[in-house]
Image (cartoon, rainbow, N blue to C red; front, side, top):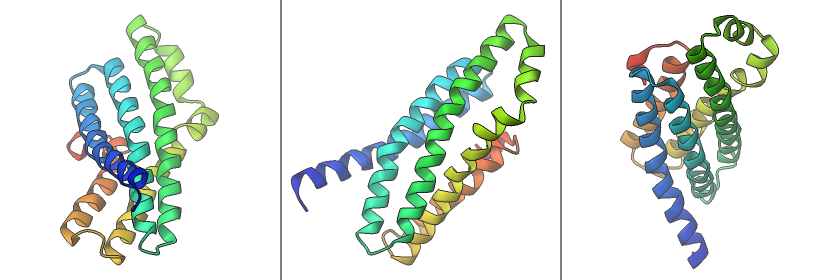
Length: 168
């Protein structure tokens, strides 16, 4: 392994710790009613997910898994969608703060807007589940780590789409 590869993997590993911690902090802000601040921290979490996903995909692919490339690509696509959503949610938070519920309703009722922002975000947990299968299949980490990883992938849409705060 070259020095640049080792550095890349180290950065990805650090980001794989920071990203979920930032996501947890964002969730706590949202639960606490700080909707604008929540969107900023969650956007930052998605930024840190990018190198984490690239590093994890690279690591699994070195075991010969082509499926990891699909999982990584879907996860990356979902992360980009998630980061983009935060801009929309930030606008909603400002509109709510300024007392414009009609505008929020119009935006939330727009099929085009929802399809091009929120619906494509489902590729994030789907990609994570594929990566979890790859981790297990290639024995990259212990089965317990895979279980926790997969549980996070499943609970993510349960909390976000289903609106169940306990799943965060």
